[in-house]
Length: 610
Image 1: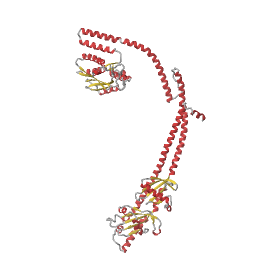
Image 2: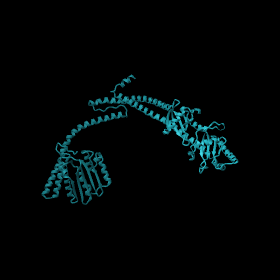
Image 3: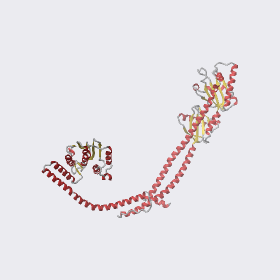
Image 4: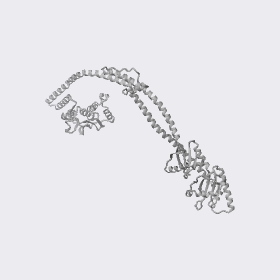
């Protein structure tokens, strides 16, 4: 361990730097992942319990609403019995005998209904004539006071109105009940009388619903608030519902729910809880579920502890792998470095690679060996090139003898033709002689004036060959004539137009040579009205222009003139300059190119247009 710490203190060692980089990258990644994971994990854990509370609230709301809705259906008990309907719709005051008979009949029907529904404590009906009919377990005097405490407008609108829980004092029964009251709109069609039905439900039935939801999780609690007062708390006995802390929570939730908050974190019984509240649409009761926040913290700490343990194991494994791989990477580099020192002394020998490696280090050594091989070949070629240079100079001097001989011979033919007054032969010989003289001049560039003279010599020869078959139109600004242009750039294009456009046409034709300046560019166009070409041939040529330096393109004999001109433009002027071709069958062909403006200026001036 001490040796490792000493080695780590040597920053100049590439191996130590590499190892420290690995460790720092791993540490930063692990810590960043731990931070991000911790935040996300806590939010996910809290979100899970919030979803749980929300799901329980929805389930409680649905079950509670279904219970109230099903219980309220018993208020329509009289619809299946015509006699009950007849009794309950009487609007006159009954005689004693009729009243007794009606009361006994309605009471028997109501007792039977209460007997069939175990959660129902009693049922009462207020008829239009003001009489109250009740089951035996009901208290008639409670009918009107109960209705008077309720919203009359809600009742008249046909809504069910549910009372808060209250104690039932009839016949010694102290159980709490709630009352479901409905206005009998089907009986009071003209609303001249007020008829109601009241169904009393045992509050224990509702406690079983709320308690059953709470029992799904021992830590889960349920609170029910009605009119700002706690009427049920799953974790407190009924006699403790009036304590100050419980009522304070009820008051706080009234305020929070008015502000639209669904979740709330509060302290209760010296512990923090997460609360979720929901208002029941049917009863307007506030049903609250809560769970201790320590469950969220415990789940978060357990998962974080497991992640930290896994991260620690992974970190140790990563450091061990970093040590192993740093040695594996550095060893061949040291070996390569020692071998390269021999190259510094002038020995161009390949570096041996004895290990069977196929990684980047192996490719590095292979690339270095290839470089040494190319350097050695370059040195050998340099020696050979020096020998060939002198031979090439001799061959070039020898090659100039034949054009000079042909040039002198053409001049002799021109003189003989003039003596014999054969003007066509004289013109052709003179033109061809001038062309050869232009060809043997040295240099890559010539003025536009000289290049055009070369073109005119060629055209004079063609006009004698094809007498009266074509005309040439020059659209050239004389101010451009001193400009410099690459030699033999125009003649191949003009020749191409004659042989492939005008000559196959058969009739008369026109050739247009246009040279204009556009900014810092010369725009050259050679256009004919010859036979043109089809789309396939046109696409093939334009495809060739996109790859001017391919070996196959330059070596091919097909379209050699266009290939050669395009390659010379790219090579001499640069990639941004171009040549392009457009053509239509039986309509003609147009060849366009752009090159930079090059002026004949003084030695102190720049010759290339900017």
